[in-house]
Image (tube, rainbow, N blue to C red; front, side):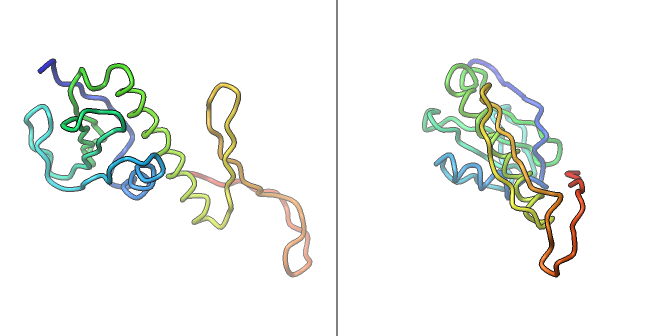
Length: 143
């Protein structure tokens, strides 16, 4: 055992659906929600246990859905393990925002920028609506 690693994330119970979608997109084992004994030994009442791609069969991360803490083993977060976890967090945030746009009535499109950043774009202004009236631009708030 090398040591406990806790990473603060913004992932809470509000993000469970995007977390599951992200795991599916990245072809990870399905996350398991429930009471978990984290790697640190503490009992987390409401956690989502994920197994990032490329981790050993016994490797996992528990996301405390109350405070967003991701708890795991220090060694598992090094190298490709940390990269696959980071990719899952990134995909989760993309899916979270995609759901917000979709629920607001927009169709987002994904664009990968030169630096690897992924940007979601939506068309929000101009054009003519179905009833023939002119539409004006607007903003979409993502709380």
